[in-house]
Image: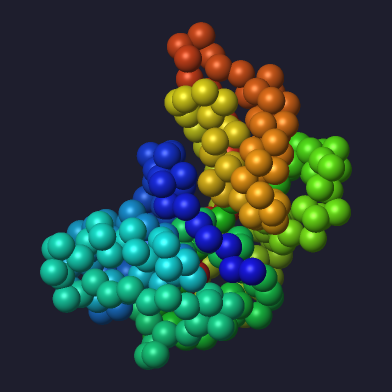
Length: 262
């Protein structure tokens, strides 16, 4: 079953989700750019940044979720900019029609299997001197993610939820280096841990509800089951990530960044 993504839930924390995306964008040195593909574009949060960075380029947002693309069109189509286009596609199979100048992906490719073939395939679809830039969460060892499995095992619907395709751990930086280095002229890989400052009640639970927890919630059959499962997870998580004296919640979050030039 194809997951139905909720743009509204995802956008609750659009501010903290945006900073890593802009950090990645800042490390792309390419200037003479005609085509930019935003892989896993979601609701189109980055489109205007691409337009500002490369004023002459065509910007194509690609996403598997029609819900996300609908939100993106609503946000941008009133500008009537012919440079901006949208494509619905499965990223495991997608390739550009012509060699691309920039393939950019922020917090999306962690959901796509088969990086061992996917990443070299994407790099091979770049024009000479083109850039593949990706940012992915590598936070699977954090309590927020480890706790999910404890809650699954304690759930009366454990057998159902175990069959869900959760978020697989992203490969180590060294593995990405070995995978990509034979195919590129330049390769820059780094990790950063962001101390995200979140607002709201039980903010970390709300964050994961729109991302890593979602496949498990989707596996349940009724809204009541989803609510019981989420409440159990959220109650356990509250003490791990308590509010600070100012009412904010701190959520350390590790991410990997890759900038590869063909």
